[in-house]
Image 1 (cartoon, rainbow, N blue to C red):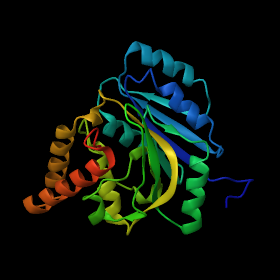
Image 2 (image 1 turned 120 degrees about the horizontal axis):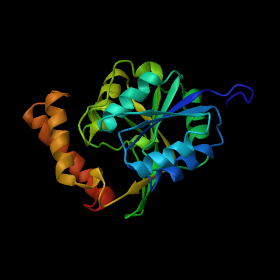
Image 3 (image 1 turned 30 degrees about the vertical axis):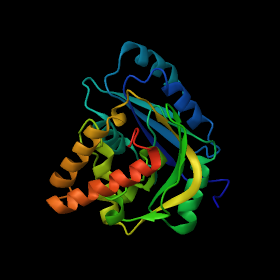
Image 4 (image 1 turned 120 degrees about the vertical axis):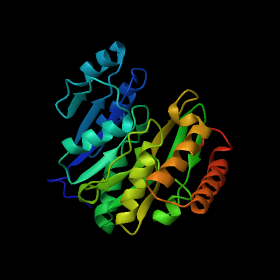
Length: 254
């Protein structure tokens, strides 16, 4: 358990683009965390005026640092930029429309420190256009992950020293897939905290709702970055399809 007098510092990374409808709720779920020693790094990806207006209200909090991009670069670029600006020993990720339950950071950091884990994730609940509880494997290595992709980005917490030069790709979708692959190639396993601590929003018009495009980009990343041959790439997509259909019934697979 953490020492009450000196809690471990966590940097929270949040890429944002035109999320004026949701980001206040997301930030409120961070402000309500029982673990209080954190810094929120928001990188705004050249959003519209309404989103900027909302962010300027958020910026008043001293624990929140916002960086403004002059050109739209994608969520992967934003996360890479935020990682460069971070300096805490642990990094957590959240998307601008997702939510955390109030004990998420506390339970996850205690789980990591007690077990000396480098990379952890949690179970999560979907909400919005589809409501479902999603349970994940107890642990995943690289070989398992490319056949499953179970780790939702907003559930992740990673030791900063394990990230090193690992980067998110600058693709518009599935940009986090390669990053997770890179980390899992460096460590033996990522481990699941078997509790539903994250709420993952499903939206019909979100980038992640187009299944065919997701398959295309995972195929491309497997080929160009993970260097999988044709057969291994095909096997990876078949397994991902199976697990996704099992979880989501063919809708909003990723």
